[in-house]
Image 1 (cartoon, helix red, strand yellow):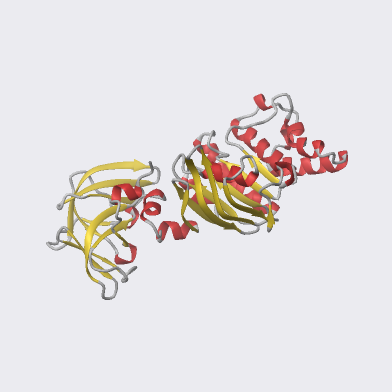
Image 2: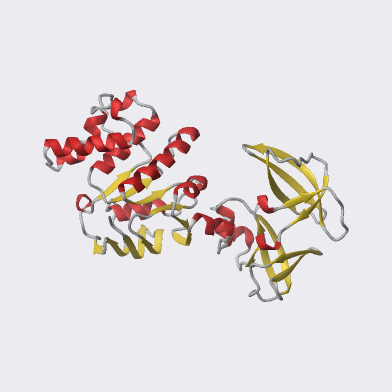
Length: 363
């Protein structure tokens, strides 16, 4: 199965930069997701890899072979679109066997591969159905099976689950990863759904404005994002602007007279910084301490398995805290609470030159 290497890849449209200076390596059999705001260059990147559009700059290597000028059909790349592009006049079997058929594979070989793919996507009993007789999930599974049956070594998925409802999407994303791993393929999956990317990826590429901001495992990007943009875009975070007062055994940060401690960084110079804390790491207690962060719960919202509390601190910040819905400790709107930010969960970043809002903006 192939690896992928992009060197200084770029694409411009009439002066508009869609992708710029993209450097990325995807390893053999790796499942990589690309996330980022709308218009950040995700789809442009994989269309360049597929050969659907020609890059303005840079080099593309698939399995260490330079493929910039190689025709689409010779790259051994399967492409699955968000818009489920099946042949409406063909049944499931004919759609899935289309690739081997046009390549002139023998009947027995074509049938064997098509049946293997149909078993893989659990559509063996729907082979005679036409696309308009299938649910959205089954149509997309057919499209995936068709891409796999074409002999693809590298699977490119462009928002493949975006048109499906939430429950079907949640089920199919795990089936998709299973299929890719069972076949030993290399996959690049573009999605706008951060939760989807976190659930299925070996690594995630975060993009903004045509550039790669950060690459890491789901756990790395969630617990230790290197950039403020990633901290905001992947999951949710509370941001507090303060000033470093000490860097002995970690950092001590003052925020409007209150103190935050972080053991994650001690390399920051004294001066203005941004502290980020995930809502699930914010601890609340009803007892009162004079030197503690104090706040009043302004709102609560049930979100699936968690309860989301909005707490207004006595210094004016609005802090989000999340607790499991089944937790024994419950709080009510109007409760006054102490807030604790565990030092091992406080992320620190130099204050950006362009300002915090600009740095984390998805526009």
